[in-house]
Image 1 (spheres, rainbow, N blue to C red):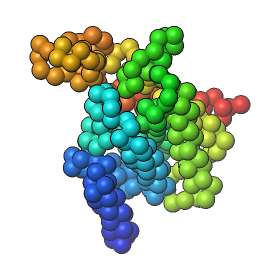
Image 2: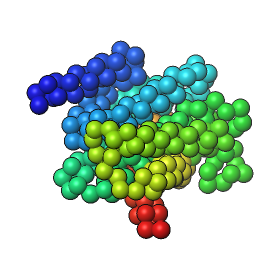
Image 3: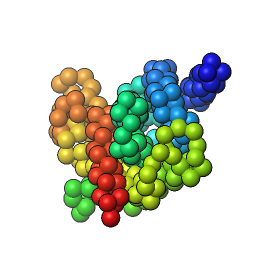
Length: 276
């Protein structure tokens, strides 16, 4: 028992140090990742930890891929390459909450929620990071006839959409592999493997779509009088004017809410397909 705790602790600390040294997470981001890592690994198991690790690898790789090519736009710079605690909790918080609920209530729907929320986080991250490299201008998801600048929340591209779906599919495939391999943890408890894969991949993709819809409608955006550009973060009072959304409803809130909605959609799809 003691040796198992030591091994798990070492795994979490090693991963945390690696993300900090590679400048993938800030110090606050590392602390938040440790909190989520402890929750997922000790309450869920190694299989859930591997699912989160797969998301982290995909996220870091897509963020660092051709980073200099993505830094020309102001909005791209605001999203940044080094993730803070807010970003970590926005993407990993719903997953950690679902693991705690599964641990206390032992209900399969919380396992579905966990995987789907991670699929959604992966889909949104890949869609954002790789979509910025699209040769064509993004289109506003609420009005596909209208083009927007790269980095504007709610803007979508074919490349980004495909990358997002691939991200959701990748996490679902990792989960399926762990289930089939009977990995230590809670994923092998899933009673309907086919429904689990379908629900999590589709639910994760839909979570990305919800993220874009929220980004286009209720997420805050500010016009800067100083540089006549759009920004997602408010600056000096009087120089930045709110032109869209609700003050305080930023990208992190959108990520958190869309991952929650994705988890709910995943449960709905799972229950429906399992009943067929």
